[in-house]
Image (cartoon, rainbow, N blue to C red; front, side):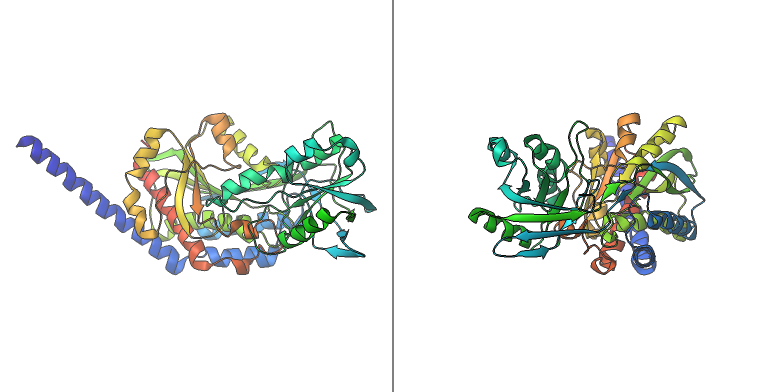
Length: 454
């Protein structure tokens, strides 16, 4: 009888706690959905700064925007953390393809970090392969002096599209270093895109230190289809011109950091962040202006509701995620030097779409602890706590300090239609989806601050 009474009391306390927690969740959601400023913050970032590649004057302007936005959100403390970043310059570029009787100009984008043609026109025949195995099978005389078209399609059978991206992205990142080994003079790729459109996607690539740097450009899916058909018939020629290059010296830039001091455990830090830089096309709205304004919104919502977190809550706008990760390294180095204790670091860098879950790189027991609160999130459409998820800006914290990681998991179906393209603009972000993502992040952070990960 006594054991049964104790069990009933425990159940009663758990039910009461759930009810109180659900009220806090509702207050957070109401505050952000009704009064949130993240959507307007994104409008200002996109329309007054625009795209903002690391090292550029626009990136410096974005730092000023971020510092002001953090102060306006009510952060207890705001500061700039220096980091030296690379500056890749695009310049003028063009691609003409002769797929019949005449050359025609097509939409194309040079890949980030690539070395162009020095502004001169490179003309060469095109040879098509579908993957690296096909390329390896080609004799050198079929490649030497030619431009290789890597026609690898982003697989549509992956429901979680980031898995498709992980499968395809090697063709963006490493194809020039592969192709040059057999004497290729340039590379064209099919974009890392799920879209049924003709928007080319840029993105980061790299050269092996020992190889010659040859230019690389990306095509949208429709033009890639057309080029593939022409290559089957033979006789395709490309004229590639590009001024892009890496500037010789790094540029001093900054992470923007704002925090609310914890009331009971101020030495324990929960970090939430997005990256402030973007590629030099579009407006960097989904990638990752959305993550930046959601991170700032976490600070604003805590302050607006008068919630005093037990742990210190820190929002970080990281610089240079796209082509160097210098901001993430600087943040981790500072944390290590100061012997900071991070409870968890979260990243929101998957777009401002409808939230579906919070992915985590944590110990199994910590994941199970968080999943005990799953029903609190269900009214907001959030159910997935099983994915492993971190982020490139916060991964140095895990690598150097063993910090648990997490990340917002929005619906992924549209992200790779837009990211790294001219189409990544403010108008393609929905205000309700963006705000709901910010609300879920704020709810999760409040929960961890209250109850920890264990």
